[in-house]
Length: 398
Image 1: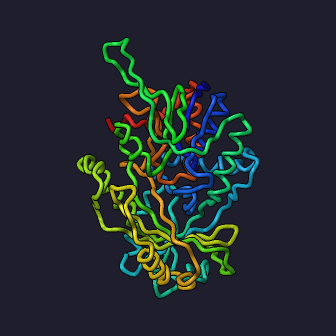
Image 2: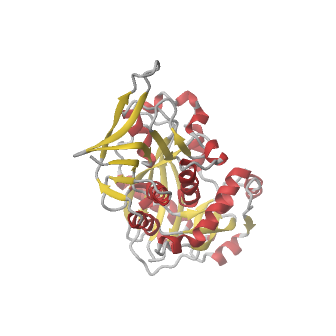
Image 3: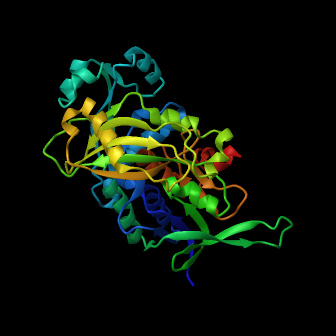
């Protein structure tokens, strides 16, 4: 029976990147993924790289490390990640005061520049000038989520790592009775048809991470929101910029719903803490398809049923106000879970009080932050000291 150094649960951007970095350090790695093609948040992401988004020395350092890493990642992975720099337009709706928003944006390390309606429409001719009172602009990176995730996976297999398409259904637990504490340890995983064993397990399952760990009796402060977007086929229409609202309710709601006071309710299905948010934005990919979003719903049931017809209508109406040419494009509705934490920082490291189980999840900007942090985490697990990884440990919430 083969045993691995690391079993990685989840083959999205987090699991693929971490598996590759672990294999680079010489670990024997098994990556387990439920689906044969990319699904979930990695597949339906805007895949933007908001390097300007840092507000502290820590987050600024990580965003800048991410920027540097993306400049040579295609060469390292031997694949075209479709990395590029685009102009971001943060549109200001009529009900908001541009000067007040500018004050809020002043906390970022790279401060977006406030521009007039005319300047915004010159940068993005598809904008409806009647729907905005101005915009902020800043340079932002962008990649193909499918290309970069596939690139990491292929690079993993070239290093001898193993990928199995199989749903993980549970964790193998053993108890060490040789000590007075009778400590519990995770020594493997159950899938629908096999049991795999490893010295260490790491959960990279994004929005389902909390539910999966809780089903095994393990608590950790990672949360999830239900995200919905529309995806068009390749179209002749051309967006010059990435368009996103300057004020996004999603972040406000995530902060309000990840408090200690609500922790117990998160493990009870059926709670809806806040109304859904709809932040109308769009990004066009290199193949000319457009992703339009997004609705975010903070619901404690990861399997909650959502009406796609109502959601699609709501998204089309809102995007039609800002980018009228996009409102009636043929598009398909998609839904996924997005992980987040209570302090906007990911959870990286060993889960307290139980040995052998780790987490790598809760990224607010995964495509920007996962590449540098996967590399740092793998180096840390190989014995290198890293104060940043220690700061991101789940034990900070204990």
